[in-house]
Image (cartoon, each protein chain N blue to C red):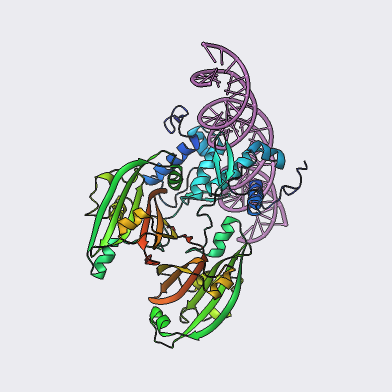
Length: 244
Length: 244
DNA sequence: TGACGAAACTTGTCAAGACAACCATGCTCA
DNA sequence: TGAGCATGGTTGTCTTGACAAGTTTCGTCA
């Protein structure tokens, strides 16, 4: 058993060892090598495998368990947490940040970015006259190359005049917009539906399968700043939210 | 310097020492002895004060910092985290108040109100040991005599010791609980499902019809205060809310 | 006076060893 | 056969000791 390649050869200056252990575990779980309910090697085995001390292995496993990825039972072992609500997707917080916290890679595919004129329903949602100009972007958020959210974003030009110049594969609309105007009020409507052909194609899911749509409006400076329709595959989703 | 009274004299069998350190810090912060922005004693000073090793002090401080109660700066020190800087984004509203604003009449039917022991999943949601005691209430909210929401409410007894004595046909659990402890953090999980027989009967809806379930956890004083499962008929629901 | 640098102090991390609490297994003994 | 116990393996926690990395302070030197 070669124990070298499991960790970076030299104590990498930037990332502590317990983080490397966490990344190691995460990668094996993500790759399917250790499926759900699988029992992990014991702490002592991981010590032999990685060459670090048991305290370090323990800290890595404990933090992953605190985060909900693992389940630990004293006297028995450590297990990959079952398929629970744990595919937390979108948040009130930045979706890219959330993924980063989970150790996932975020990417976004921009499908459209344009100005358009509000139809009566959209105009009413913004409190603007019908035909008023709005900005619009449509993008798909990917977690480790898997599509997890379709974002239809409508923006009041008054709030973010430079919205159309942004590169949303580099900065999420959420992040850009909150930098333009802090949201003072938020409204959410949750809707259970089924994927229409366009949605199914964007999210790489079968047509007519169940999905959840979050309608979100945010106000800034007393006017409706943006409206987002966030579509997720499946019947369950975590609306993260928000602390202090 | 007497170091004895700061910690329990004997290594208390149940609670580990790092937990005792955390409780010590928490109590001083809660009592106002260490106000916001105050600098805490250094790790080495806490070692002298408490008699435990620095690793143990470090773990206690690190976990409190992870929870957001403290701020740590390498080379400088540990500080009590400032007061809640910004507002909560998702405001919770009392369902009875919402109805009043709409000019509807609210009523509630209490189906159960009891104490129970947490199964492992519920215990995990609360961060309590399995078998811990919880309070529970099940009630149906009526809008103009029409059932609109089935509320399954689980409560951490520490937060609301008198929960079982309340008459929830007169005051909503939400209203009572927010009077006990202000929520500082909220988490929502949305789930689309179909009504099982019990739910259908409670909401006077056909069995197997679509419904939306909101799982809501709220934190107060850094612990999980309550968990609510709110079931609504239909495929659309306005989560509400709010402001600064 | 001003710039530089050493020293002290802080937090961040890791190692090695130890004991306790808990669980599963298998063995012994009635 | 069945109950009870010993044993080994697992996680949970703690201590001592150490080094690294960051900040502040203050003294020294130009």
